[in-house]
Structure formats: C-alpha cells, structure tokens
Amino acid sequence: MEIFLQQIINGLVQGSVYALVALGYTMVYGILGLINFAHGEVVMMGAMVSLSALSLMAGLPPLVSLPLSLLLAVAFCMLLGYGIERIAYRPLRHAPRLAPLITAIGVSIVLQNLAMLIWGRDYHSFPQLFANHAHRMAGAIINDIQLAIVVAAFLMMAGLMLVVHRTRLGRAMRAVAENQHAAQLMGVDVNRVVSVTFMMGSALAAVAGVMVSANYGLAHYYMGFLLGLKAFTAAVLGGIGNLRGAMLGGLLLGLIESLGAGYIGDITGGFMGSQYQDVFAFLVLIAVLIFRPSGLLGERLAERA
Amino acid sequence: MSSLLEVKGLKISYGGIRAVRGIDLNVGEGELVALIGSNGAGKTSTLKAIAGLLPAGSGEVNFDGKDMNGVEASRRVSMGIALVPEGRGVFSRLSVSENLLMGAYSRLDAGIRDDLQRMYDLFPRLVERRDQLAGTLSGGEQQMLVMARALMSRPRLLMLDEPSMGLAPLMVKKIFETIKEVAAQGMSILLVEQNARLALQVADRGYVMEAGSITLSGASLLDSDAVRRAYLGG
Image 1 (cartoon, rainbow over the protein chains, first blue to last red):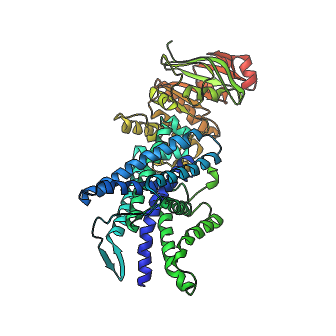
Image 2 (tube, rainbow over the protein chains, first blue to last red):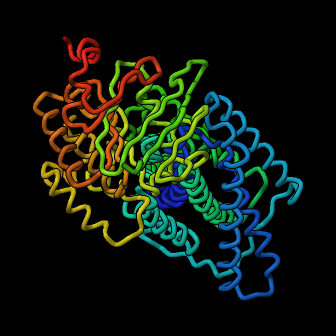
Image 3 (cartoon, rainbow over the protein chains, first blue to last red):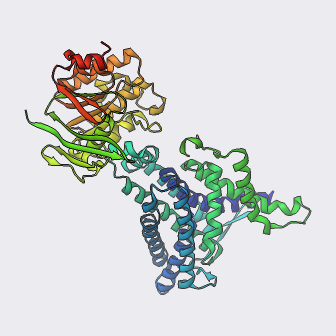
C-alpha cells in the first residue's frame, strides 16, 4: 500500500511536468496543426538558463535568486519560442505539412548542439537552495520541491484555462484555432495570436524545465529530448489540440509510468526492473495510436487533416 | 451620391485563372447594392479582395476615400469593412455570445455590451441560445449569428456573401427581412446572391457579373429582359 501511494505521488509530480509541457505541444497544434518537435529543447533551455542565472547570482539570498532566475528563464524561453516560430515555421505556413515538421526537427538539433557548445556535455547539478523537507503521508513521502511542483503546475494550468476561456485574447486564440480566415474577418491579427501562443507554451516549458532540474537536481543539454517525446505522447494520449486533454494526458502518463516502474519488478518476478520506466510512455503512445488515435478527449481528428 | 466604396479596374487572378477581369463598382453611403451572377462569375473573389483576404492583382479599392492597397484584412475591419463570408464561418466551438464578442474584437470602446443587447433585440432567437455552442445552431440561426457578429464590429460597409445559401424558404424570407431592416437603419450593404430576384427586390441598385466582368448595372435590373432570361427564369 505504501509503495502504491508513493508511486501515485511520484506519478503526480512527474505528470504535472508532462502536463505543462504537453500544453505547449497541444496549443501550437490546435492553432497551426503543427507538431513543434523543438518544444522539448525549449524545456531544456529553460533549465539551463535558470541554472546559469542561479550560479551568477550565487551570492544573493535564495528567496531572491530563485524567482529571478525563474523569471529570466521564462523570459528567455518566450523569446526563443517567438524566434523559433518566426524563423522556422512562419515562412512555411502555407507549405506542405511535412516541411515544417522537418524544420522542427532541424531546430531541435540546432538547439541541442547550441546548448552543448554553451554548457558542455556534462551534467550540471542544480544547487540546493532550501532545506528540502520530507513530509510523511500515510507511509509515503513527498518533499517540499515535489509539493511545490504539483501546486505550481496546477496553479499555472488553472491560470491558462482562465486566459483561454475568459479573456479576449483567449477567445481570439480559440477563434484562430478553429477558422483563421473568419478570425481575420473579425480583425484578429493571426500572426500575433500565433506568436503569443508560442510564447505562452514556451513560458510553461521554461517553468517545467526548472521543475525537472530542481526535482532531480540535474540539468543536461540532452534532457529535453526524452522529456519532449513523453510530453508529446501525453498530448496525443489526451487528444492533441485539446487543452484539457493535454493536462489529463500528462497526469495519466506520469501515473502510468511511475506505477509501471514500481510494479514491473513484482509482475515479472524481478526479470525486469524500474529501468524499464521509459518503455511505458511509448507503449501508451502505440496503444493510443492503434485503439484511439484521436486521444481520450480528442474529437474529429479527420476534420483537421 | 458620395461613394463609400469605390472599386476601379479590379483584377484578381489565382493559380493562372483570371477570376475578376477589371471591374468597376461602387456603393454609396446608406445604399443597398446587389451583385448577382452565376456560380464562378467572380462575385466571392470580389468581396474577398475588398475585405483584404485576396490580393488585388491590379486596380484600386477605395474605402471612404482611402486607398486600401496593402492594408491588412484585420486592419480593414477596424476601418469599417465587415464581410459575412460564404458558408458563414461561425466559430462552432465558441458559444453564441462569444461569437458575437469576437465580432467586436477590433473595438475597445465601452459600447460593446449595449451592442450585444441590440443584437439580441434584432435576433431574438439568439438570446435563448446565447450560452450554447454555435455549432449546435441550425443553418438559419447560424446565418443570423454571423450577420449579428459582423454588425458587432460597427461596420460602415456590410458585405454579405450568399446569405440565403442552404436555408429553408421561410428562413430566407426572415434573413432578407433583417437585411432590409439593417439597411433601413442607414447601413451601406453590398449583397452577393445567387437568388437574383430576391436580391434585386431588396436592393437599391444592382450589378450583374459574368465570367469575371460586369455586364449590366442599374437600378431597374428586375425589368431588364437580359436579366430576366438569364437569372430569373423568363
């Protein structure tokens, strides 16, 4: 029972991060019908920039340096997301769908190599700024960082839903997602809405990057790749293009992974261990693509294609 | 009469097809002008070019005395040009009231709430459905919605592309009554219709478009033999 509860907690923490990153994939897909495969790299950049900022501000009290470095990472990633769209996707807006997909992979490789040149190939350790208290809950343990991750992620998701469903900007985003021409006829500057969408997704990605590296205490130029793929899987699981789907998919994927990793040893009699954790995400992806390609909350995928 | 919209020598081609081959057309302040013609005559392309959705190959579009060349579609909305496109273009996953608010997207003034109420007065059917997703409305209700949505931008020129398309006769009647009502309030309207008789009945003037050119124009097209033979079935 303790193991079960512990894996639920771990899954929620990991799932919150997946959900934030999956939102970035799904927002861009909803508006442009494009899979932004460079999105995982934005997460990595967020982590790396915040790390560098933290080490520059090493003398400052953590209550100042942590929020500041987080803000810096968010600002940097928003600019990065804006730039990626302007340079790599906008010129191909009316090109066949395969073209922007290939540039997306190109951007991803460029960013990875750029990060490798700047920060090197080594793992960087994320400084421990606060005492990370562990809390006992019915035999399972959750620490301060994990608690902060889950709370912050839920707050940000709630904030995003408010923006999308309750503001003029959010209305314009949903209008553009559904019918760009009609949105233009309402006076919506479609390019601006697309830029804002990329920037919002990138801001979430930056925070997710900081969360991951704070949780594991590590950051690395390659960390965005697998995380990006898994978050993409989460978006597909929930139904790509659907915001609620991305959140649900992220949390579910986190839970599936951690429960899978927790019990695979017992199930296979010790033949396979928790190192097979990553397999579950992709088993889920394959299963979804076979049995429910439109995802859990997805609708009418054919209409978009 | 002073012209609100003046189109001179407009040519549009896309994909090697010359859709519009140099037309002149104008709509005066407060006028209801019909543009009729068969399928593929270039009527929709003309409206799209005026709205800025299609680049004009050559020629001029002047609105309120200003050359519209190079002005983005989204800018033209705030200048007062509204187009209700063919096939309506409702945002089916937005609620009825959200669709109407989208119509006022280009406005930042305080009168939006009042205008919303005016639209509900003009189209009482929309009141009952204000919180429903627009995609669940019937075709006629959707047509009402997109007309109301266009009016929410407080346009000076309202362009309607085939408002009767796909609607039951009773609904067509209703829509045209509304068009007359809006025109009576002083709105300048450019109406594109395949239902030539209806369009010419409500319009002050009309143009007949054939294969990208305007072949006839005037105030009494309903009496013209050529129009009767070609568009009114005798």
